Length: 110
Image (cartoon, rainbow, N blue to C red; front, side, top):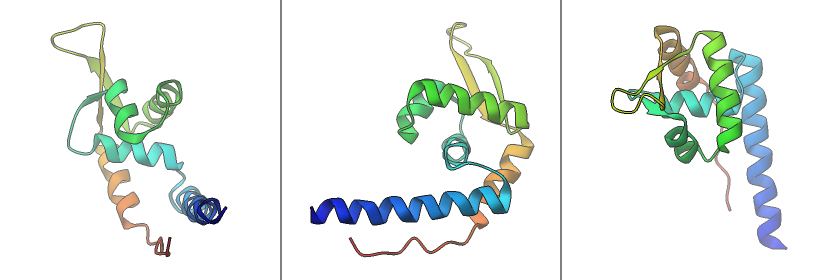
C-alpha cells in the first residue's frame, strides 16, 4: 500500500504540471511530450509512441492536433512511402522553447 501512496503523489504532481502547461501555454502534457520527442529529429508515429509511452492510437490523435495547431508537419518516408514522418515546424520549435521555460517544482521524495 505504501508504494501505491507514493505513486499517487507522482500522479498528483504530473496532474498539477499538466494544468500549468494548459493554463500558461495552452498545450496538453501529451502534446508537450510529442513536441519534446520530435526536438531535433524526424520520427514516425510508432517511434514517437515508443519514446513517449503514449499509446499508438492516442499518439495519432495528438499528432493530428499538433498538425492542426501548426506545430508539426508530416511527410512520406523516403524509403517506405507507406510510413509518415513527423517533424517540428518553426512554430513547434518556439513551442518547445516555451515548454522548456515552464517553471514547476517536480521535486518530491519517493
